Length: 625
Image 1 (cartoon, one colour):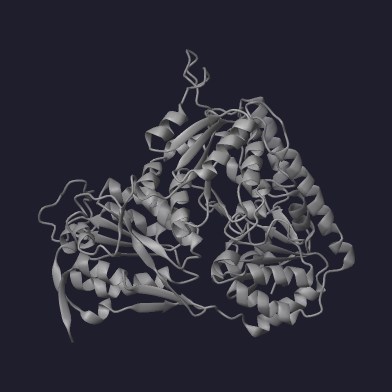
Image 2: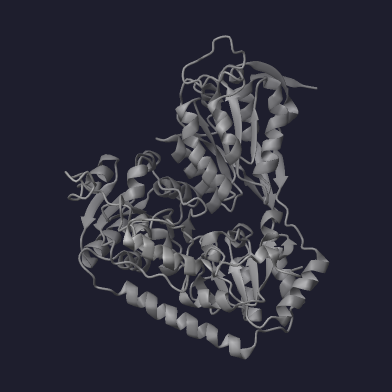
């Protein structure tokens, strides 16, 4: 056996740059380089290995959490067929990545994390930034990655790398099990040499399978659909990852079954598709939520059925409702006592379509769908057409950005009140035109995520819509977008605080306590004047060309100028957070204090207890399978 004497870090980089994936006969490079910030735990080992391998590009982020968000957004845009490695030193550099790891794993997105670690030989411990434990010498801050990683290992000897990297790739390329993978790399081991077999560095292509549905369960699913009177499809992110948008359009068109889209699944159908009722759940449209309420059969495709989709188990109120769950993950396919089709979304929709040849929903149900669609389009037009303020309403800003963007452009968001309004209002015209990180709803994802999206598809303009709260948590990657030459169009909405949680605070009777950016007064509370924050200066200081807009006309002018600019640009606009987009036919379970000295909280608790009565226990449905 021929070998090469390399450091563990050199061997790792050489292995990563020769990994490929293949699906449907198309081959893709899997790792497109490494993001990170060098520190004493990685600059000598991994840093030197990257220096010696310029064809495996190193990208310098400004925050380690942002590194992971960039990689996650890139992988999501590439339908999980490509990603980055993310490196860090031991200590705060490593733990900065934990939030990003949680976002990747919860959203089922492949990202490889390579944090530096303590010395395997231990004799110089405790080293700078080392967490000591009186119970073990084999504990470091990197153990905190375990619950947010789909695979975790610590490479304590250079020869262990051979086995570990293959297991890491197994998980990263699994449609069902993917997420963050963490390989903790002791800093001394990174620099140790070993004779690695040359076969380790040969090109390796990992096949991404399209799992076929079980024939017997497929037949039962077709039988259930044929007997249903008011079926509904819930389209999740699995539709997009499976590249099943055309299959869904054909299936919905053939059967006449309406579709409601989750946050991850928005864009599964164009907004104007005759069967697309739009957003579903807590942030859903009236038509989609009414269809969910009355559905006797729910066909959940590629969705985790989270509380925002199910309105905390209150969305599906038909006493006899049943579920068919199409998902590559058994965990999701068995939810709500559903009939589990553990299979690829595209393959299964095509097979179901063939099994349902000649079937179509009844006319009395079919006629409701265009009525619901027309009603919602008129409501969207109303919100888009408001002439409120200044300051403008958030819904108006969304409408202006949507109208002036092109069908192929991509909107990026993650947290605050914007995701709910975008879910309802954004008119998605092409697949992947809507990029929301809402599995973890991580504040600070937006600008870093926008950069990852732009890198994944430079041909499409990216509009990052971010509230002031998320902007203040992480705006650093504006500088990185300028450094790397990837243009972002950033729209900063300034509402002087946390609009989303402020609205929730009001809804639970707390009057927005602690949710505005206000000076502290002699009362001891944060109830003084608004704290002035100059977001224009902040964006400019990070390298973006920035303007402030106050009116419809100024915002439109700024957006038109953005289109012509090849540089990262930003527009800052104040919005009236009290002029909110309503909720429609839905509810979210946020427990309210059972005992309180505040009357408004007591009243909210009484309403909460009434709403709680609508929660269902679908998991114990008799005869579900």
